[in-house]
Length: 516
Image (cartoon, rainbow, N blue to C red; front, side, top):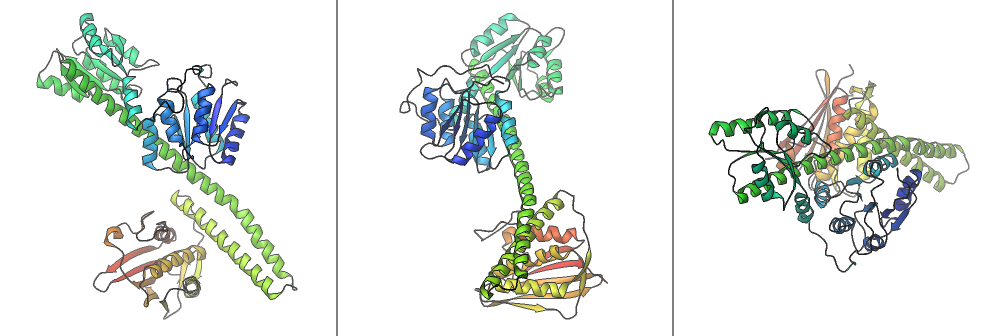
């Protein structure tokens, strides 16, 4: 890899610039230029020939996206690799960046290995290509920012069209019509067309004559569509054959359109432009979906690793507090604070453990360690905790346990299930009402019902247990009922929702295997 290329890092967060700089330095890339805002980055671009730009999306004055648009509108930086960094992974922002011509898109947090691999991918094989020198670059005030559609139209103007016809005169006519708008490639035989399409720089669209000696257009199209490398190149048949069966056969082979000779120039141009736009939109969508999937996997991996690594320091806090509590000379106030510290650490550890458990369940890696659970005692503990948590809200929680019951499962998982469901029930209940929790036995199952006033909105009832479904709570994550269902089913149980609109009540029922 070329070690002397200039690289620009633009981010208003100093620690992020240092982190990126560390990755680049480890790659023996040391010609680094840093900017804390977009306008500063733009001034650097005007004075130094930059070969790679790494910019944060959100920066004061001029955002990374605006900087990207400026670069793609400038002849010196039109094709220079540009990596956008962002804390958001929304589909709209990703589509906006792709339309503007971004080279790559990374969602924070990302690993050093991920950033390194993207950089190698972008500049590893083209380190010898230097941008043009900057003396004639326009000044900051001279160049307006581009809109979203401009880079897309610009890409269309750089598209290449392969014209395939065994008659040289026909090629000359078509090339004359299109050469002012596209890069033209030509082939006078089907075999030559396949060779060009499978080359290092395949065309963006193919105009294909049907009637050719040796290998006709139908066979060329059939072979193009049978190979992964060429099957997505749009093919427009251009031929004198205009019978309905001919058109249908051509479209059945995978052609996107059928133009009859002699083609009207305006019609031919319009159809080519339409199918280039459609092809470009499809490629952008594939890139977008791939980036979203990559970001989702990365976030899941980071979350899982982070949670795993958190267990050690949190456990250390809890153990330290426990050891300090063994000393007898603490004043009551200090002892109470140590107990609070120990309790908070244990609660955090439970949350981390639960998160890892949910991940294992989703990945099909969870193994249940079933044991006998005293449901009555567990529910009493959960009810007491929720009462303390919602002491400010005038909602009564009534626990009804006619006979002691035991279930088979894991105590921590069951505790999380009932804590989530009871918390949701109290939050959804109007003031001065009651949440009724009842434990019963039906056959080989223990049934726990939670009934509260207020009904689940009709809009989300069908998807109540789906991931990220929430309604009416600004801070709701939509994970409480989802995790309750997942944890219940992991223990061999099931969960159901019933709403009584006439009585304005909601009832959740959890079924768990009985211990005896």
